[in-house]
Amino acid sequence: MTSQKLRAAVIGVGYLGNFHAQKYKNNPHVELVGVCDHFPAQADKIAAELGVKSFHRPQDLLGQVDLVTVAASTLSHYEVAKMFLQNGVHVNVEKPITATVPQAEELVALAEKNNLKLAVGHIERFNPSVVEVKKNLKKPRLIELTRMATYKARGADVSVLHDLMIHDIDMLFFLSGTSEIESMIGTGSKLVSKELDTASVTIKMKNGVVGVINVSRVSSTMTRSVRVIEDDFTLFANTGVHELEKGEKGPGGDELVKYTKWTLEKADALQKETDAFVDAVINNKKPVVTGVDGLVALKAIEDVQRMIEG
Image (tube, rainbow, N blue to C red; front, side, top):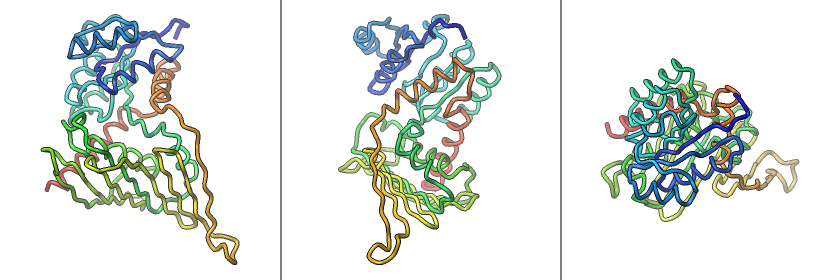
């Protein structure tokens, strides 16, 4: 790459897309040329706030960008990402990668064929607590992931599996060191929407690790945590506030169990995700979360949904 700045844009600048655009603005290697949204007034508003051009159709960005982030609705991910990949543009797409597995498979193949970077926004890979947990693991036996959120209409166009659990599926694969599932059992309920609002699943991985995932988007409180059991220690991380606690065998006497607690500094995970994508493009590196990672997570979520809904 030359020293010239990469030209970037964000497609879909609702709540999350607006943040994506800000992160591009913060990256010294990028020029944010514009933002695009299906709703012209929204595109105009965010463009004015950021001092960039407003676009109302993604195709109008062709020839003006080197990389894009697609943060529009899940149902539009496939068409938008495909158009850019067909036209030589690197793509970072929000999770889930697409609405269906065949769509994701097509995007992965297209990116490979055209030698382009396809990254997926599984942001928890950039959460300092998750990175710290991974660093401490030796041979996990059980990984328990909990994610509870209050109800918001935003995101309710898909199930809680595609909205929330997909983060935890990707984390389970990341922390356990495999994405190969041996068996699973679980249940869920549709409390207020047409799609699942709560779900719990127990997954046995082929390497013997057991994953327990509990998610809800109709909780009264917000909770995000990881608990790991190994033969000689337990580790708990409150991944929302970056507080960790490790329990292991103590020296004896009154201290049969020794607890170590520590807190990590807060970090801007979305900025880290954006910077990593830009770095992958500049230095021709594999993205931290690849299109294949996004595809594997989506396949697993579809398996969970089939199992729960019978």
